[in-house]
Amino acid sequence: MGERSLILGAGIAGLCAAMALSGRGRTITVLDRDPPPPDLDPDAAFADWSRRGVTQLRHSHVFIGRLISLLRARQPALWRALTDAGARESTFADALPPTLRAQYAYAPGDEDMSFLFSRRSTLELIMRRHAGALPDVTFVTDAFVEGPLFARRDGALALEGVRGTLAGAKTEWRADAVIDAMGRTSQFTDWLAAEGAPVPEESTPAGILYFTRHYRLHDGAEEPPRGLTPGAGDLGYLKYGVFIADNRHFSVTLACPEIESEMRVALPRGEVFDAACAHLPGVAPWTDPARAAPASKVFAMGALKNAWRHFLVEGAPLVRNYFPIGDAAVRTNPLYGRGCSTGAIQAFLLGDVFNEMTDPAQRLAALDGRVRAEIRPFFDAMVRQDAQAIRRAARERAPDGRTPRWRARAMKSFIEDAVGPASRGDLVVLRALMRGFHMHEGPAAWLRRPAVLARVLAAWARPRAAKAHLYPPPLGPARGEMLAALGVPAGGA
Ligand SMILES: Cc1cc2nc3c(=O)[nH]c(=O)nc-3n(C[C@H](O)[C@H](O)[C@H](O)COP(=O)(O)OP(=O)(O)OC[C@H]3O[C@@H](n4cnc5c(N)ncnc54)[C@H](O)[C@@H]3O)c2cc1C
Image (tube, rainbow, N blue to C red):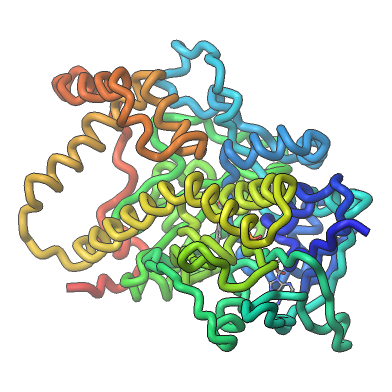
């Protein structure tokens, strides 16, 4: 019999791991606490599929180029099934600002910079059906993992499987390799700590709460034309985004700083949420009642953070035969839309490592090194950005009247007067930026290309009047104005 691989969790990382490990003579078992996907269309699945294990299932999700490239290259039949189910590819050309459309000509690599427009529930439904059809993969549903089966081998801790309940009855699952894809609620860190092997974790707050509402375009209604006002933006006291999805659906997320205690209490109310949308020029044309109607209540979610867990200590695994991937290992602020891509990257790297070597310690070390090389630069950049956003939100709420230091002013001007106009007026710059955005190269790689940097600096040097057409209109009202319009007390200072 081939290697027995036990995957805990059938979310994005677990499903990708099943696909990545398949086809090499292994026996692959995937456990999940939730029921199987219903034999329903995407709209009914969105409404009815019980996914208590994935509380973010009904929040906005954007799927970026790296995930799409991986799925398209490694699982072409899955890609076709997704588009057949109503998910849509939005290409680099489709997403261009109006200022660049006329000069667009295809360049190699543009095909890696597509978005997939889909509800998370639709993506997961189709991925799950695809993985379920693989002959060497077995799903066991309503299977709740409750604890590890640890053993000591030559003094070292090893994982032999897990125990739990299957449809209410106590049971055990044993395997040669256990892949933890139970997401951010995985309890392995607690179980390892109880065994005397605490897991070092770097953790920083995302500083925001997520509020999401789904909408459906009326029959016959078109999506609003894309102008220079972006469908996503940051007002300091509020971040927002329109997420286009499948089958005429889209959602809006309003990300409220944690310190905005009055606003966070008000936003879950549908009428307040819709009123906030109506005051955001990039969102209002979408949620206009003449064009679309709400298709859900407002979903709220907090306790969002960035976390990187270390399962190798001084080069040795804390526990042998244990391979954490996805949110169980690395968690990022959802605002950046990278969690599913990082989960998929880890899962396919795991598949490569498993195919290349057999020793569990070597496998974990190789996985750790490759994941670090691919994902760590993004993680570090997101942590830095979140810290800045938290400081900015505090200043918006309680301005201290101080003039920012020259460094902060120069950085603001570089973003607003150089990078912004250059990316709206110069295809070379936009391409370079978007390759990092879609995780095809490091987030700062574009800055190290002299030709790109020169174009950005040239945009900075241009007088403002000469680039006035490359600035977006105001993204929304000032904080006080918005709160007054929503009838929310200002709090703060
Ligand atoms: C509000 C929000 C919005 C997000 N938006 C985006 C986005 O726009 N784009 C993006 O790429 N990412 C986004 N993310 C991140 C993304 O959702 C996660 O990174 C991704 O789902 C992680 O995949 P995973 O497989 O590791 O975990 P999950 O997808 O959470 O799956 C975990 C699985 O484990 C199962 N499970 C858990 N505990 C047990 C147990 N004890 N026994 C058995 N099974 C168990 C669950 O049922 C579930 O199926 C968002 C996250 C949040 C919170």
